[in-house]
Length: 322
Image 1: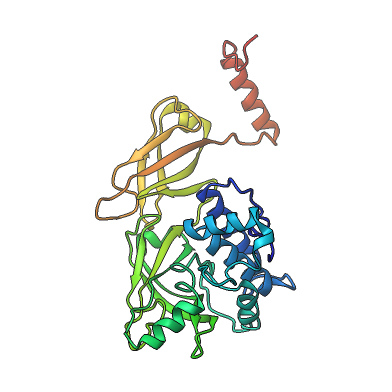
Image 2 (image 1 turned 180 degrees about the vertical axis):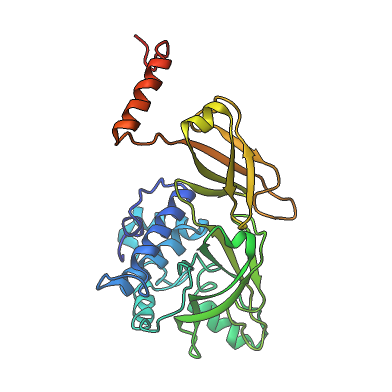
């Protein structure tokens, strides 16, 4: 059997689908040949793709786990007659040597997910379909990309490059690089999909191409993240602004500025909801301001004296229990 797919992804056999997806995205960022500095990035990326394609498909995973438990009865996964999938060693060879074309990512990470059910049942199924002369529509395929959260408010047109599993004229599986121009409309919620008609796997015997579905995810940080159509943004405030309930100006992600009245004695981490100021979806989300109280440094003598006066004014305040 080829490399253990769980080891390729750094996971145990009881890993959840969410853990599988996170591991895949992490490795895709590390090894994609257009961005990676690793010497064997192309090969490692192909290994990661094949491992994820297998383990994220329930039927393939079941078959693969059975083969792990009974190694004496099988060769490389997918290479035996009567089994779905494909020969992973052949997949690696045909996927190699295709980097070097520098794509314009324009803020995108070239992250692609599992496409349909891999190669649609493998080489034997493809040859059967070709011999039958009956037209077959190509499989729909799926990709996942990450973009800046600001795009949810403005929309954007960007170029992305994907590696698409397909068949050549001889019915052999290979990886095709495809660069597409994608229009992302404003108002998409995190996790929503864009459908690109007939950009999926090629049809057989004159059948139409499948569609390509691109799932949009917004980049997040400790200060900014999206949940569906809601947006959480950390806002720094001074201690006196929080204590006195002063009005502060906040620049939102659509570029506008809003005046926000803080409640008196606002606490660190407290959330203030700005209704319908989140992602402008058909049902608009809300913008939640997460307050972060920032204490100014006491560097000059005057600043230190001000802190001393503050301490004297609040002698009864005990931040720690005795």
